[in-house]
Length: 380
Figure (tube, rainbow, N blue to C red):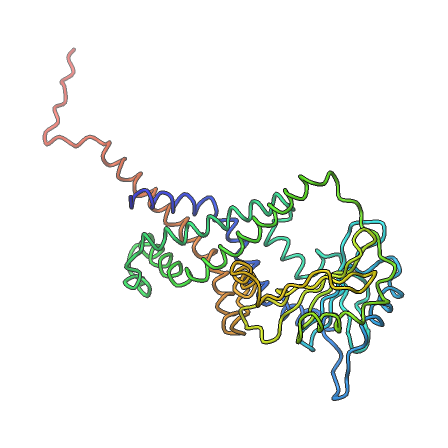
């Protein structure tokens, strides 16, 4: 059984190695994407310095200014930044297209980026697409899900193969052969990061598989999704959404609005219930509000949701390590680097082991030298 696990672990590591390296490195960047954007593009993502009397402008005023400044676009979603240092993000769609753009806007001054950016041109959007889809849309999501499942199997098989892990965790035999040193590094890194890696693998695989399953179900019932058209009465009701949400879920923190369309005249609100723990996402409690009547047609308080809904809502802080502040983010960032080390060390171990076996076979195949070799005499 142990030999079979070795083969499974080795071959799966070779097959998934490069993909996991890309996913791990991009994941490490995404953990600190806001801090990276703040350093590289402070004028674009940061608000102006706030004074003691600074107040957010009304959302209707912000949306009106955005649409006047960029008449070729219309707003599909609005992300309220929970950190006052960073700007809000408006998600726009270019008219008569299905192309998505992002615009950063200061909610206190209404100052915006110079232009809406295609989603892939933002640091976050570029790394997200590479991390989850390898720039291959749904096919890429399937491939990423396969690598995530492989990562889970690698973690479980690694635990089985190195059950007395405490003996190998801090042992690095620098004076030994390269194969032994690579093996020690591989075991130490794998064992130290296995809890985080299992979390990353399970949450990532779930998201991608759930998305693919949703798309398959949707396409089975719809021949072709029509192009969305702007709903004309968005601005008239948008400022009342917070009050409507408060009546539905007292203490509700509104974090994201998905705007209505002519085909679907509904505001979709995503936020948090009051007193939400750090293991809760920013979007776990949802409210649907009719854009035509202002009536709440659906309300879901995460506190009253089922067990599985609460588990999957915790996946976001668990996946990005945000539940423990900077400390867990640093740990998750380091865990994201581990696939690179494991892929490299595992490949080197495989190569060294292959050369060693080849050397043994060659030595066995050579005939032993006789003690006395008879040389036939040449006759004339």
